Image (cartoon, rainbow, N blue to C red):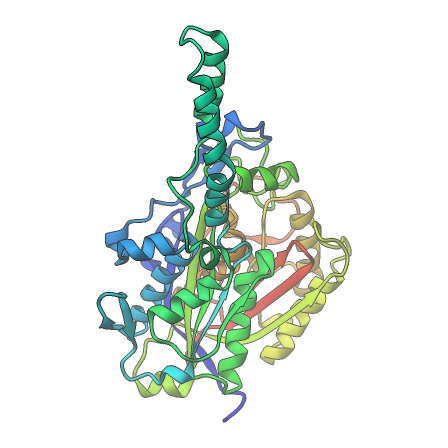
Length: 457
């Protein structure tokens, strides 16, 4: 196979708190829209929190997403929204799926060799929703039945019965233990769901490196297409971080990672601002980029949205919960991505930053950007609009970078009133010439990953 092929993006799909198709999502980005709500009221029964807000998704709409009841019952929401984003990306790339099995609701891609297309998806946690929902059935169902039986022996006027009944009512669980729970909770189920859905026989891989998962998945997909392993790659990330008791939220909250100044929920999320207090937790999201080699794309007259030119990744070997203060490995990742792309730091006109809103991340990231790129490169944070979607974040930000290069426009860094550094942050949505851009992700564990993209001309 030919090596060093040019790799282009031909299709996009997204599920997010501000839109679940790429056009609506992008329009809302440019308008600076966010969807921030108080956390569910019943979560306060089970814990006290430092943060009290999150970014919410629309409920899964089975009809809109083209799902059967069986698919909903047998797949975690993280897989379902990934499949929906993949369908959008395929359709927008001109690869309209064709139904082959109505009962299984499965498709094939006409004109595409199923052995020459791969699936490369990232997730930080995978099917945590399914795991926790089924664990509550395992833990509570039999014990609640026994406790109900004991309470039934007491008088209805008994204060103990009344108090215990209130506690009993708070112990919610599902109707049954799902026999598909093992396949629902495993992280690779997201990639497998897409491969099964579209009858794809090529590489089917899952990247699980926390907040860098989506970026890593797209980066490895890019290399696979460039090196000739596959001709097409469905690449991206997906995450669904909701559970009835708020346990996943609590985990991030107790680590002091989440936004804490929540009095005004609409201005609380403020990456790169001196008054930032943590990241906005998102219920979830997904994004998929359709990649293919340039000759294949041009041969079938596909829409070409942008070109991926480079990818690199490094590891801090510093801490499982925080990035190294010197930012040395982040800088090495940036420079390696530029080398992989054959570009200089002066060629980069825009950076879609990791930009979480935590004290450490934003300070260290700003410092490293200044060291490598200077003060002129335009910078924004998509997390300032949608919050942090963990394993999906890098994929969503790569999608934003594609749209920015295609339309030569960037969205604003929301709520950035007083920047922490003297850098060129996008304070409003703006039109500006951009030939190349960097989008990057850093993750718990110490993982750093970055993609270099170019405007396609």
